[in-house]
Length: 264
Image (cartoon, rainbow, N blue to C red; front, side):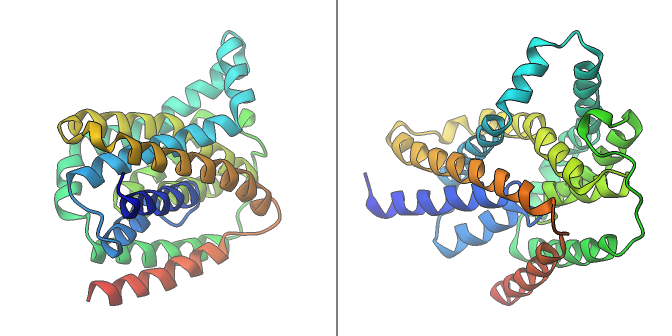
C-alpha cells in the first residue's frame, strides 16, 4: 500500500470527522484540502463518500442509546413525533437536492464558490447571534412539526457548497426557537437520514470508480473519520451548552478569505 496515499487518507478522514458536524462546512474543507494535497479525480470522489459514511456512523454511535430507544419503542407517541420531525425536516433538502444535484456539482463545486459561502455564512451566524431570539424548545422531544419544517427549509441553503449543513440546521433551529443544545442535537440526528440518502446516492452513482486495490486506503479514511466524529460530537455539544457560535463564524470568515486568496 502506498504510504503517501495512506497519509492522505488519514488527513482527509480526520478533516471529514472534525468538520462534518461543526458549522464550518466539511465539503468546503474537503475541496480545499483535497486540492492542497493533490487528491482529486474519481477515486477521490468515492473516498469522500466512504469517509462521510464513517462520520455518520460516528454520530450514530454517540447517540446509539437514543436511536435504539426510538427503534424499540416506535409505537410510543414521543418516538413517533421524533421520527416525523426528522422526516419533515429531511424533505425540503432531499427534494431540492434531487432536482438540482447535477447543476450544483457542475457549477458550484469550486474554491471561489466555497469561499464566498464560508464568508457569507459566517456573517449570517454573527447576525443571528445578535438577534433577540426567544427559546421555546429546550429538547428535541418537545420540538413541533412546524419548527422541524423551518429547520428543513434552512437546511436547503446547505446544498450550496461551503454553507455547511450543520451551520444551516443549527442556525435554523435557533431561529425556530430551539435552545443551542436542542438545535445542535437535532442537527446531529437530522444528519443521519440526510447523509445516508446523499452518500447512498453518490456511492451508487460512482460504483464504477470503486477499485479493489484501494479498499485498504478507503478503510483507513473510514476509521479516521469515525473516530474523529465520535470525539467532535461529544466535545461540540459540551461547548455549545456554555458558549455561542461566534468563534465558528469568525473562523469561517478568516478561512474563506484564505481560500479566496488561494483560489486567486
